[in-house]
Image (cartoon, rainbow, N blue to C red):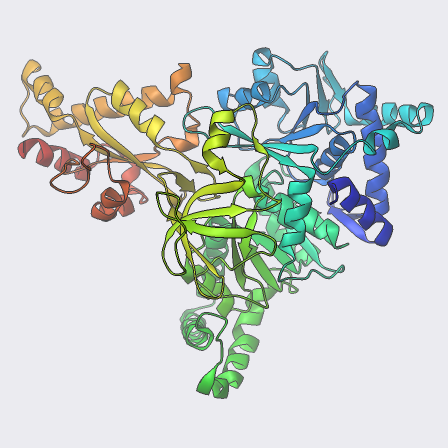
Length: 637
């Protein structure tokens, strides 16, 4: 069994002159070889030792994806410390400070763009000793140090203590903790997933069950580097094979960075890209927009080619089978005159995407497969480091999440924990060396999730007879955002009901959508009382608008609350909400015998309302639809 350090050092020995990282600090991309990165890592690691960082100390890392992100993590791991990678989506609030305090991080490594967040919350941090800044800035504060100074200290420490780093590396074992990766919790308290060196190296080995990455391949990593999927499938998997990782040129903000991605694709010409559903949808939208701009003839021809390709490819594993083989020249023609032009927009060398983070619907899978840039969907979760199954060029079925990787036991269980046969859906449960060590300082959550070495994923799915996994959603009631983040709605729903007197029932919805939405059942009795006290009539539009304004104000107060019990991440709170024309009852099957809301029934019954919530009109809460629904539900009581 090997550590991440072993993997890295082995790759440096095999591929010293290969490019490991491509980075564009200014006008052109610059390459850094495996040997270059090793030199940086060893100096950086010595610099961390000079600060007194010891084995098992936690060091937080908050930065956009870049060379120094990888160098920072490798330096942390080389001294036996634990990296706490943080999402750049975190704001300067309790969501960020909780992670830093809970992990007891004493050192924070941060980019210039993210530094204001750390400065804003540092008064609330209990363990902070030093902030390392990855960029040159003029106004360093007392407890801040630049990366340049760290590297100078590292060179001195390396010269004065030449054996120190190697002595520490020899003490690091495969079971040494590498990361504490925070995921979303039930309320404001997320859980810290402990992943060891072996969790990662085992999962990297598993990642190559059915796929190969030649050492000349490049990937441009647009996903955040702390993202479990990008972290393993891009950074470490490519490193393990002597291939290259390119970072997107960092802009002044996330929007500018995303714009740079388009330009960078043409410059890097990646063979593989990692994608999540939100990105896939944007890619398709831009492709179709480009086709439409060429006129009606080009658009009609593209649709014709697409429909033909759908018919020809079927589910991918049976593409061109039977008499369809006779039409292969036609597919080649469509590819030459249409699809190859699209491929050029991605640099011209793209072989395929690897999809992860959340479920990618089969329609998107068919689309990218048709145009000759397949998006091979996989499945995993951070607690499994994260890869559990994957479609690959050799083995794939559109609509599935691919074959289960090697050296991983899997079973599908019912609610009683009993194994189910192939084809029957239940909870996905796995066991292997990639399964996390547990949740940091949370034994209760660990024991609920890992039982006798088996990881209970909370996801619903089934296996077919060829060991392809089909993931259907949540076994439990977690919501999933567009980028794959999973979070529990119950605590938020309860808080809204408790703090909003005009709301009787409330359900949050997000199933890989751009934002979270809310379904409101108003408290009819409270509203009738308000109408009576204010001498208002239900027929009066202005009175209804006033009530809607009161409901909106109550929800906004929760969004802006500073109370600890209401400190929910803003992205989990509803961006749009709708008043429902009827409530959840046992009669309409939306409440079960224990008086719990049956989420699936609610979402199915109010599918039209949910679809409406993702329209421009829904952004206005005082809409004609909400006025009509509010009047209807009160009239019916």
